[in-house]
Length: 113
Image 1 (cartoon, rainbow, N blue to C red):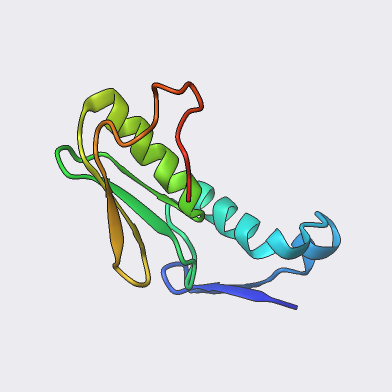
Image 2 (cartoon, rainbow, N blue to C red):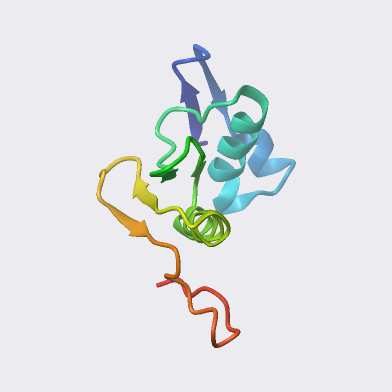
């Protein structure tokens, strides 16, 4: 059984409940990490998150998927005209989302590589 630990909470959890009762399958760890963040305000250890941070104001988000962080960055850039840096928490490499980076003229909405 997979386990998840959190040094901030000083605890470790066996994910048998998520696998057996919630039938979360391959997404059990991700679901637990999201629930942990919602209840405690932080992700458990080893949750490889994507960070989107505005370069002009204190706004930002931390998400488990690249697409979710990128969508937030594009929405923030579109509404505020601010640049947003998107990076993976473990490698520090990132991309910059600038106002106007999305293809709004076609009506297709943003595109995610």
